[in-house]
Image (cartoon, rainbow, N blue to C red):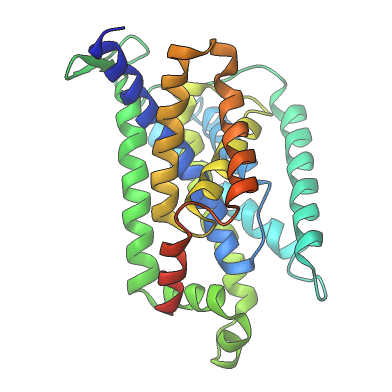
Length: 296
């Protein structure tokens, strides 16, 4: 196999890894504020893409994207308000079970609304035949949108959590909810905002990747599993760790094609997840998480 072919796999892996990073960040936002893992995160991607696909038939693409993100954000807020906010002394297990149930409900609702067919948004730039030459490797312009959005999300969240009052309040909740409450922070509202932010990022990710991966009612499940693997790999709550974990997983998946049949590609993420949970469940970059908590 030539160096150019290997570079092609690496570049595609980086692009796919960026998709996983956006999913993992959605997990991290809610985990940091509530201490739970939202297993409905994949459905936020599916909803954002499906809503945008439907709206794009009656309005310009950019308007459809914005409205899809807004509607998905509202759905995220309603999920938290009706199913989580009013629980008395909820345990982590209870909240996880609720998010799994919500995931199933959303998928079933999507099946009745959009059927089981595969749908797709139009390419933001060019079409499925367009490609860009990067040092001998060819990638679709849509992958550059994925890379760009991933970078903007990470930079924007770093600015939000470090330099805004609301972001600092959410960080305080992630560090010590009781202390945050004593300081006058409405912890319940911070949880709602975390669900809204996670839903918005999930919807954006779903819209950006839809032209590449296509979308159907259960399409968020596989991406949710890989995003969760990346979140564990980077250390839950650590967005910078998720960035590294996503790129590692994306590249490993694509390079595995050299040695393994294509059918084993998706199994690799589950294998990595099991190994990390068995050897170091706190993640490979847990030290960075702990050092960031000390800043609170």
